[in-house]
Length: 507
Image 1: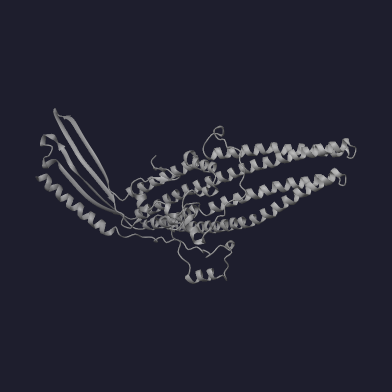
Image 2: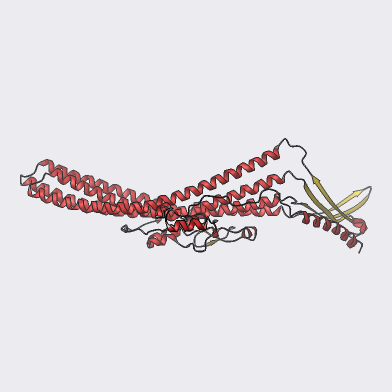
């Protein structure tokens, strides 16, 4: 009974100290975070909406809107707009074995652990230290027992610990955005390499067809030479044409192998396990709508990543400011310590103590002021980086929107040039057979046809590359709602959806 009364007194004293600490714990020094302002255009210049258009004027009257996650943003497998089953299969393999993506997931797991570590500083540290001692002194043997516990708690009176938790949480969210950014970049690279493989297939077909055409031309020159109406140089020139185009055709095979192997690396497979069947490059890539510029701030993971880094730096200012204020630590100990001969639970053996201690740095040579200045400079740098990332994002989208429009026009002009070149080859070859045209004109016409066909394929590849780059620039199917919330990061471990399958951070 006496032991319970003694312990009750110590608990009351400790409870009073804890209540006082709780009352003081609401104070948080340092700046409260707000998202930095960025200049967001109401419409893309390449969308055809100009400042004097009714839509632009109406939007201007409504004023700028703050960027928030949009419920209307489409989500899903962005590459399916190309309607290619092989591409779909390859990109899905990125989520299985790509090592860069796994590295990003590991970094995120580490960031979550740092959040948990920072949260631990809010709670007391409790230590149990039981011991038993058997001794002999002056012929007397004694046994003493110590069953004591100790607890200490550094109070977060001015919010330094809470600011640190928020900083680590923002860093974890930045790492989550890095997962999305890495995944999207790799997917886009796989798609670009895949269309380069298809370009190589189409180029191989064009070159092989021209090899056959040049061989037919060689046969014509041989017949003309045998009939005595053509020079030997015509035959040699025709042979050179065949050999040159054959060499180009062989080189395309190596180009195809290089791109296939690049895809194998991106999906985390040995090149020997990856095979892509020959197929044509479709003539019409999909059109990609860009939406409105304000949506870009929510749809790009690199923008979200940069913005989260700004908050992390903002919270660090609070951590540095909190260092100017005193620290208060409450500690308590209690239990049983003494000889067993007195009875282990004897009041004589009962001990307890409660201590409240404070400390304040009186002189440190300006270290705390320097820490605040460093944190403020880090924040300014993060804001500048965020705004630069936003500017680069708008520029990338504008560039690829222009590429879509201009390359579409270029392809129409280039296709017309191919048609004209084919007619020119047919006419000059017939005139050469009739003896009214020299072979140099035929060679020139055939060379123009080959160059125009290759250029047309290159323009088509550029259109596919621009479509992929624009989709990547718009964030694919991602938006800011995919980031884990503060409550999720501060709670139990949650799965990460980084590719159609949930992966727990601790896996």
